[in-house]
Length: 159
Image (cartoon, rainbow, N blue to C red):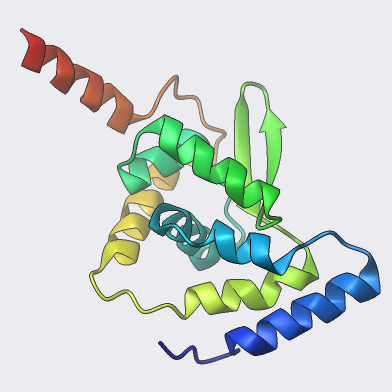
């Protein structure tokens, strides 16, 4: 797989140099491990596509069509790797891309990953719908629509 803007080796060299010169704690292997999962790549791809946007757990759960517990665990891995930052507002936590300069080239690499099976474009389409539902307001959901539907489906199956 060839990336257009920055090679992976160039990125790792840049990251190592930047991190050592500016005393920030971003470990290249932690970054690579963080994206070694398709769900985490999908999360990052959504946020890289809309870099000024913030997302709460229910926005991402509905966009990815994944259980909240899985999405929450993946968000924690991405935050711990320095790829995402979080802001708490009331009972909701909003995720956004990290503002660290050291990870900016990494975001370009993620943006260049080919969307061979349209997974990323479908995720992004659902995410834009979730954001539009909020009308530029903070999230007010008690749970994601995906979780609500999954619970109803499991109840019907047991009846």
